[in-house]
Image (cartoon, rainbow over all chains, first blue to last red; front, side, top):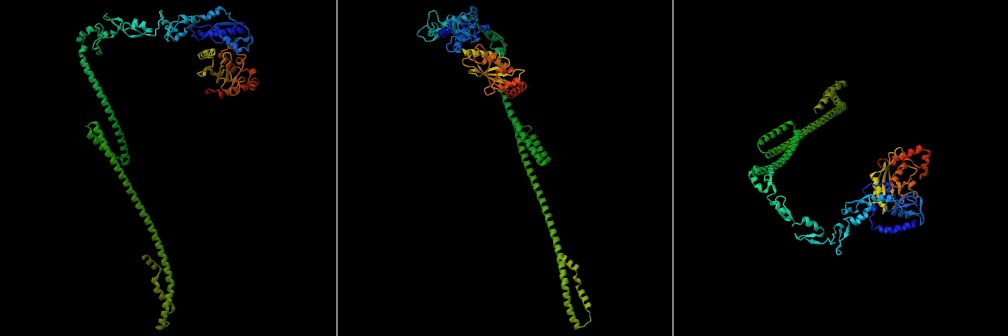
Length: 447
Length: 155
C-alpha cells in the first residue's frame, strides 16, 4: 500500500487501539533480542510493518515518522533508519518476527489489582479480557454502581455489595466475604477444643481454653523457675507438693524487701550527691580565702587559721556530715573576717609609715631652708659691719678734727703749743683703737 | 506519548550503565526533556582531567527530531561555539542527518569522541580550526589552559 493508504489505515486502527492494552507499557520479564526492538520506540515490535528497504517498524511509530518527515503530502519519505526514499509500506512481515515478539514474557498489567501471572505478550489481551480474575467489572446487579473483581462474580450474577445476614451468628457480612465467613470465621461455627476434644462454638472457644481441664498450664511457681507444665486438672496436686510454691511467699517477701532497699539506696545516693556538691563548694571557697589570707599577712596568720580549722574539725569530728559542713562554714567566716581585719591593719601600718616618712622629709626640707637663711643673714651682717666700718672711718677724721679743734682751744687755753699736731693725732688714734674692724665684726656676730 | 516512554527508557539505560567518562542526570526531576551531563575530558587530549558540563535538550518530537547538545563549561574546541551557548552542531545532530534509530548514548559517545578528535573541516570556530591545523602545539596549549581555568575539578 502507498503512504496515503497506510496513514488512513493507521488512523482507523488508532481509534481501536484505545480499547486495547498498551503493549509498550508492559513489564517485560524475559530478555529479548535487540533486533526485535523498534528503532523508534525502543520496544519490541508492536504490529510491525516493513518498508521497501527491509527496515521494520511498529505501525504506529512509522505513521508518526511519516507525518514528521514527509514534506507536504509527497508520495515518498526517507526511511527513519537508512534515509532511503520510501513510497510503499508492506504489512507483510515475516511470521517468525511476529511470533518472536509475541513470545516475550510479560507481567499481567493488572498486577496492582493482585494478579501475579506472567504470560506471553501475545496473550495479554485475551488474558485480561477473559481469564484474569482481577479485572474490575461493573457489578452484575444493574442497580449497584460499584465494581468488583471478575473472579468474585458468581454464576448466579448476584450483586456482592449487599450486606447479608449470617443465618447462624446473626452478624452482618458483606456478600463478597460471605463465603469465607461461613466457612471459617462465623462465631457460631462449631470447633473442637484441641486438648479435651469437646465440641463447642467458635465464639466460646477462647473462654473454654481459660477453664479447660485438659489444657496444660504452668505451675504457679513458674516465675521462681519451677519447670512443671501440666494439665489444669493435675496442677492442684502438683502445687501441694511443689517446694517452690511453698517457698513462694518467702520469695515474695524477699523481693519486696529488696525493692524497698533499692529505693532507699537510691534516696541515699541522691542525698549523698547533694552533700558532696555542698562540700565541694565549701572547699573551693575555703581554698580561695586561704590564698587571700596567705598573700595578705604571711605564714603566721595562716597557721593560726589552720589551727582554728583543725580545732573546729576536731570538735565536729563525731557529728554527722551536715554539722561538719556547718562548722566548717562558720570557721570559714571567722577566718575571712580575721583576714579582712589583718589586711586593714596592714593598710593602717602602711599609712603610718608613709606619714613618718613624709614628716622626716618635711623637717629635712625646713632645716635646709633655715640653714640657707642663716648663711644669708651672716653675709648680710658682714656687709653691714663693713659698711659701718667705712662709715666709722669716714666719720673718724671729722671727729678727730672736732676734738683737735677742741684740744687746740684747750691747749691754746692751758698749755699753748705744748703738744704738736702729731701727738694729738696719736692720742686721737689711741681713742679710736677699740673701734677696730675685727671688734666690730665680733660685735656683729654677737648680734 | 511514545517519546516519553522511549526517553525514560534511554535515561534508565544510561544511568544504569553509563558510557565511559559520562554521567547523566535530569536537570529537573519533573522535566524529562532537559538532561544534565558531566563529561570527563578524554585521555591523550588537551581536555584530559577536565570535567565538562553538557546540556542536552530533547525536542518534543523526539526521536523524530535530533536532540541539541551544548557545552555549559567553556571549552576551546573548533567544533563548539565559543560563546555563552557553547553549542555543538554537526554530523548526526544535524536535522537532515538525524535518524530516529540513533540513541542518546550514541550522541554522547560521539560528543566525547569529538573532544578527543576535533573535526576542523566541519568547524564552527574557524579561527580555532585554523590553529588546530597549522599550529597544533599552540592549540593544545590554549585548550589545556582553558580546561584548567574553566573545567577544573572544582567546577
